[in-house]
Image 1 (cartoon, rainbow, N blue to C red):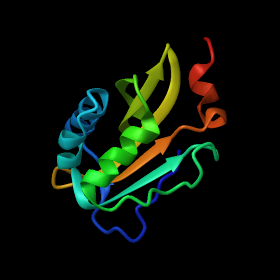
Image 2 (image 1 turned 180 degrees about the vertical axis):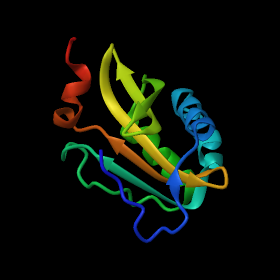
Image 3 (image 1 turned 45 degrees about the horizontal axis):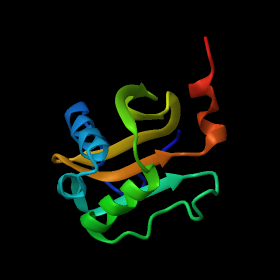
Length: 130
């Protein structure tokens, strides 16, 4: 998963505590708590491999973005912290299969960018046995 914060000065991978709080809010489908973790100008990027249509959310503001994230991830989803490309991210499993990988950029305790990969072909290596 590649990501770029180009044009968003001062943004860096979110710290593990913020990632954990984001995962907890997503797992409990608490859109209000999730919205509280998102910056006012949050950007949501979803790579669904074309299954969901576009790749970038048209959500406006944290509450709308929280609902868009919930819709993209679906439920039920078991989220766990995992090292991804050297940063703390989340791996989402459904029925034991990895169905989502999530990385966050943020600063000052808020999430600025949410990167969600749902494309089955990009997640295939996460589901290979030993």
